[in-house]
Image 1 (cartoon, chains in turn cyan, brown):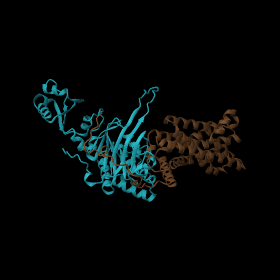
Image 2 (tube, chains in turn red, brown):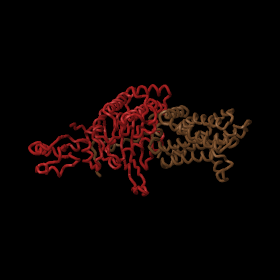
Image 3 (cartoon, helix red, strand yellow):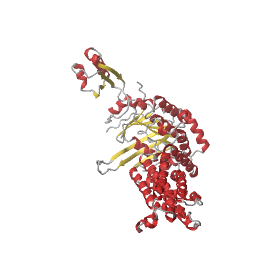
Image 4 (cartoon, helix red, strand yellow):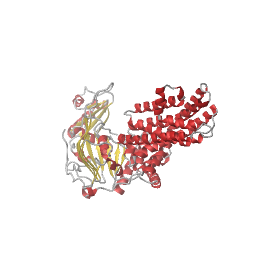
Length: 340
Length: 274
């Protein structure tokens, strides 16, 4: 495992802030109970968030559903006014001038309702025109982006008739037409197959290399966060509980390894070594997940791969910590992160 | 909760000075009103091919059906004109008021407005583009209803061209109303309900001959913008239409259209940023 803790851009002296938030707070008011809906207390969806995203970074917001990722992003894109705190995008005060956000960044939200009944080509072209391009420029960029993402063969089909992943890719295409220095992508790869995912990250990398594009990415996918992000802020109940490079975060829990055991039918609890592990295991169906010190893990593997226990074992994996382990070690309470 | 920080926590650790006013990056240009309006209009019109054609048939059949029914009750003259004009404008009410209210209600509820709100597009372009497209959807149905009705009741087709003015002006008034209802309704079901009620009102108050209504309903009829489109069209079945009265009726439609589209634009702005 890498123990790199420095920022990838540290050597480049390219620390220009693209997006800064200072002490950002947003509280959803308490809702009174109505028929069929219980009362909900006031929720601090964004609780004193201070972050800086630098030029050329792929910066991630990682957290389970309800952690406040989308609420934070809505405040950065001018869609929601914070109760207090400041948001600056490329030097512009977005709290005071929310309408400027649309001229500085491209936003891919989770919803595609506005584009659903358009064809892929028209969705991209119309979005480009509404981003201020003239007809010729919008069509040229549309063709380039659809080719780049491999969408040209389905350009004439309405989004509604596409699979979830293809529809998501078409919305991503629309976000790229009419270039912006900052891309804000809210779970862009949801439902995509590996080919489409690769197309998304290749397109992002190309823009970063050629134009220094900055990306702010919302995700609850741990694997994606580890592979594509330069830095990641981990969110839990509206607060940033950690912010570093993925490897820097993982070094904090370097003393642990994760052991996953999958039993054929049920765990052989009559084997004393297995019974001893049971107390520490987190059970999901036939799967046990254990977080152990390396020597404990070696002993556990030796115990379950010998004799009676091995006969009952279907599969096992021993792995270094993932960002999910980091999240749990930091006090994350929800087990809502995706590991695909 | 403890906040874990390594030395590399740049965001939280070394806070750079907020950028001075001079350090603001240049803003990309905004979309201008007319090109943006054209782009929204074209996109909305294309939706018809995917989703709206069956509904347009429903709108037309409904109006033709009503005229066939009324054929047994009404025997020509003033009342027949009211039935044909009312049924024709009902198509406009069905599509521009009812369907547009539903569309904006759903768009708002499902977060679809975020798409437009994060693009540098004037709010008026979004509202006018959608309203214009929905008004355009009504053209074939209104024409078919007017021609079929005139043949059915033996009315002259001489001045049917007046629909060129009636459809856009009644369309503006009703689409503006529909957009405003859809964007102001707190829940999408309410937007649907208001759109349906508006259409029912246009049906009952527009198609049924006004002379037979109780006084209260006649006042309600005067408050409904579609009434003026109906009256304008009905007047043109005369051999020598009173063009001043037609013009006045259409001017009311235009006035309501400007007002309701302005309200809808304001409602859009309000709905887009929460």
